[in-house]
Image (tube, rainbow, N blue to C red; front, side):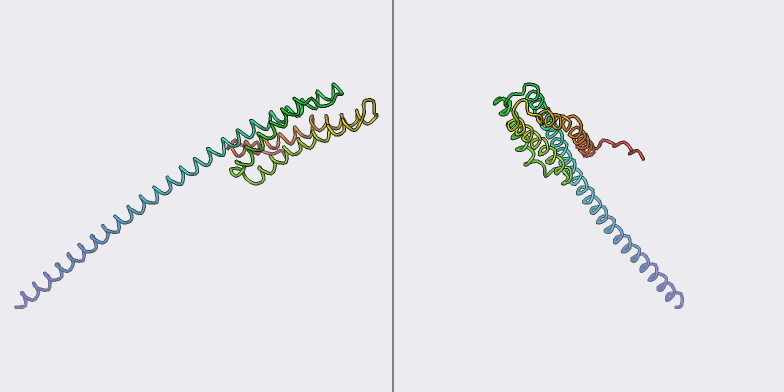
Length: 193
């Protein structure tokens, strides 16, 4: 009799242990499946996020390149216009004014719609650069109109504008180029101490 009770207890223990083991393995299996599914979902979301960021970076890169491609010729056209007018001591050429104004409109139309892809500081710097160019052109044209040929202040005013376009404005452009290259991921040289 003791043998039967002992056998029943041992059998019951073995069956209970096996049942617990099967239950535990089943739970672990379900957990592993859920974990695998969650991992796949996270990987998919990460991939989608990476694709979105890649598309945003691509749009930002296109914006930076196009802004630069519009801004540098605008700078060169305004500078050339000032140099030609300075050398000729003549009133502004209507075709020249129309050309510069068309370039400014083209730049501004593109810039106002795409500056969202740029950091605020960079967008402000770009806008400031364009405004500086325009302000210097308008100031130069005003001086040339107000000061008649032979006026003693005329050469001084011409040199002030020339100095800005040969020193200050190129430095501003260089700083802007550094910002734009940084946005494109180009490594920046270490600053000298």
